[in-house]
Image 1 (cartoon, helix red, strand yellow):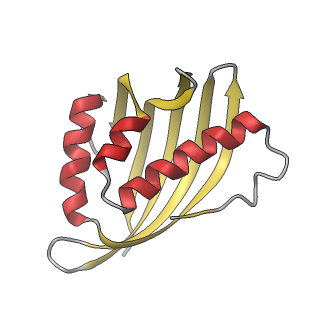
Image 2: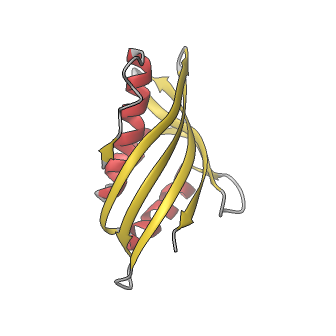
Length: 139
């Protein structure tokens, strides 16, 4: 992915670390690297995609990510921060992702993601503890 750090000129070291965690997640997703994504998730994390019926724990989240990767061929993406806030060992990132990918049927798909991710610093590493967001398939 191409991280857009044009907003990051006066960010603190911690804000940059949080943002690097977010972009690493999306780089892993583009590479279909479930192992890399697993390493970024806190054991007690919960995620909630707006098209899902309820929040999902770490293992449920990874099951769906693995399924979604079947529709994640030849991706290109741009990850753009809107706001990154850090308070102590907690970081919150609001951002947008523009993606294009080829699904399992060979159809090219363009989509826009809007996410809010919450990460915590645990054992010296930033890990996802929660997120909520939505994906819009562009027509």
